[in-house]
Image 1 (cartoon, helix red, strand yellow):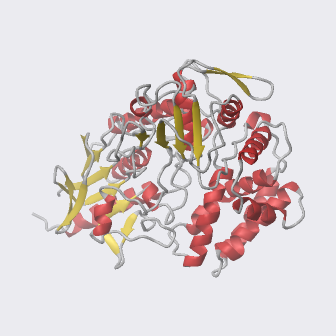
Image 2 (cartoon, one colour):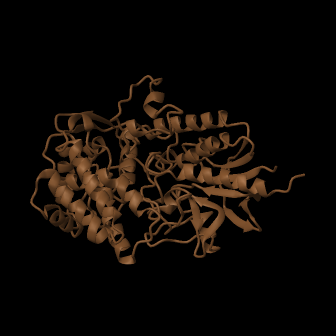
Image 3 (spheres, one colour):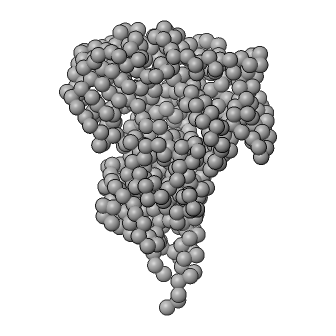
Length: 516
């Protein structure tokens, strides 16, 4: 009975979850043997570059600590349980440094490896994969040209850290990794900086160039004060097409929900009824329900949320409007101000997101409906999945102190250095190796919502059917699968489904082998 050969290409969190799922599935099938090649160039599999344990501590999670758990079924410690051994206590509502979570993910990877069943042999390759090609009935992984029966690609942020982008003295193609890209040589103290982008990566860049250089934020009655280190840029000027900022996530300990769990149970039941209809569309059924739920949250007249959203999405914010929106969102998040329509709509989106994921994932919706969804989802990303409140408070403080400027949102400001603080959109629009080659060779297809198409077992869907032995999990599938940018193991079951399918395939293949 021959081993089933498997490659996992990219082993950040999604690769870790898949490896863990495979080990568990293989443990239940001890008569079959598996060799797993793990391709991950970073020194910390499980964490990968995004959760690098050595990145600056000022870079925070955008996901509360209490929701982080690399394990299913209580087989290992959640992040909170694991963090009990650290000298600094962690609360469930804390937004902890990404480096801290990276240490947990790397520890979890090492535990999976140490506890792998005897019928699973693991081989690590500390290298980047530049191509995956089909040769006969097997896949070949380059540059080593290793043949495998199954390949799972979990390469995450496909632009990575823009390794191949041109870097010049006055243009930085990505702020990551910060310890190499945002040095004082690259961005000198007292220099002027333009930042393309005004979302989470901009926040990271801003904090790295201020707090990360020794500046100190101190809590005050209305937010923060900032003590300069003298190593900061003189001006950091973000620019973006809309100028619309992200809203702060609430501080759970300071915030009172206007509705109880029973209210949300009723709304979710109503949404479930809508989603069961065979002719349901996002444009005509789901989104109107979300707008109605939002009005009900605050007891507003019908149409209030619709009017708010239409006005917001048609507005390019001025500097004063940015300041006002940031302050309103921050004060709501800190429990100092009554909730508004932006908060209510964001809360509906968050509360109903698991149902939306289940409905839209693996569904080819009509092109017009897909376009409408993508436009709305982009704005809801700003409202529902913004940074922790403390980071918005720090942004407000730096702008008030003149270090950050909102006066150049069109990008016209002259600057000593320009930093591309954007991340390419998730999905199939800008695929990098090895996915770009697989798309070119027609082993992949792109759906109406822009993601690489996969079935519920993560198998790649081509124009003609299934690409046997080829699977993708993560950001490249965004649209076909909704909500990939999460550490949650409960939102998606693709790792478990993929692993079960691999083991089932091994059973079937071995049953067909002639006996000696």
